[in-house]
Length: 397
Ligand code: DNO
Image (cartoon, rainbow, N blue to C red):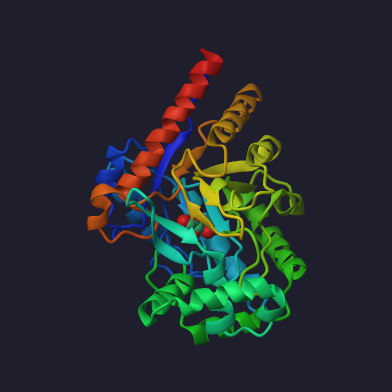
């Protein structure tokens, strides 16, 4: 039988309260990390990469995937200085390749990375989950950010629900909502102020989805040929949530978008991170079918499950529950592995990580990055590896 998926765990670096030793005990063998202390756009030097790589190796683990080398806003907005940032991006890729790190995740979400309104949503059993509550986002957009155009984007019913939500908040709740939405890149503790965010929004005033796609294509054309020479597999992460928010365009939200990325410059170096949690927040994304069709371009898997609600809200459910059929997803992934094995490809052990997890048990005693507690993710990983083993043994033994 062909090999298993590579089990990985995200680690935020030395500041992460979840230690490498703890990660080793989950059974994961690969680490997914980034040099979070280096600002987006700056070059990761060989020395810094080596230091981090050695740290991981001393714990008996391997640095499997970089998540993420973030793309500078100048590239996303096609500013005059974007050429310089593309060059720096390529320099970082060269330094990573020199240290034999060859899977590099990134995203093309404007300004904010992933967005949640509630990072401590309590489930019936007391576990804490992440949630995107549509009326809360609308309340922020309409009444806190006071974005003019938002009044045209939300129906009067949505506006009424948002107002009702806003009125239910005390000053503390309101502050928390702002902080949750304005939290910047994962791995940093930086939170944008409303003023900073508004200044960013202005830069996107003339940028619709079609223009943002052109800016992404420019980036790919600059970087993919270099990545290919280096043997690096870039893999774009989908938008989270996979629809426009706060007036910002989104361009990696469904199959068509992903095909546009791939077709912009076909290359093994131009691939996908398939995140079932991000893509699963849209009911019209048929995840198993997407994996069947896009499979050969997938270099990295994020496995998690969201429970969708009727109004566009969702919360993060147990990995095997929620609105997406994780059994069918895993089966599609295994079919892709089988195709790779039959076609003589060597990248069969696709790195996967249990993406996010609930806060459970002792997790409450640590101030971990939202979604990245140890026990919650350990539970997810244990379930996913059991599912993989069960399906493989049923199909192939
Ligand atoms: C959230 C993540 C995202 C992801 C980036 C990839 O937990 O999945 O923040 O890391 O968007 O660039």
